[in-house]
Image (cartoon, rainbow, N blue to C red; front, side, top):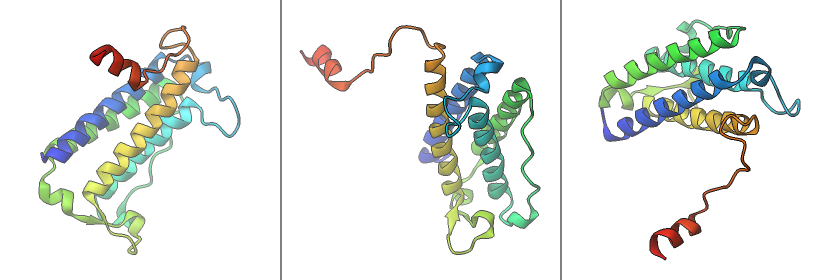
Length: 167
């Protein structure tokens, strides 16, 4: 594995594990709750991450998108959706561990759009960016549900850390 892929693999797996952990800790009501119709539910966030993992994996494995099966609809039950995300996470873990530097440089065209060359590396980093974003959104919901404690949130700003370390 190349150094950049090792880094991406580590972070992708970490954020996917975190998404699964937050989703598992939510009640069914929390999983489907939204503060506003324009805001996503936890179910939407998990589904979005899962479906794009499948889609980008298909682009990596088969360059011709016309040969891809359609992405499956999400399981309706929370446990089934989390299990599906766990299974897709394993697919990505195995795929990334076996990926060669040559494979990373192969060109892809998302949905066969030829006006934009996209490397396999680009697919991997697209998923990393997407999953980090979904994990952040899901973490916000988890914090608001008190799943990480009920004390008021205190942000770890850098200057107090500098003061603690350097006086």
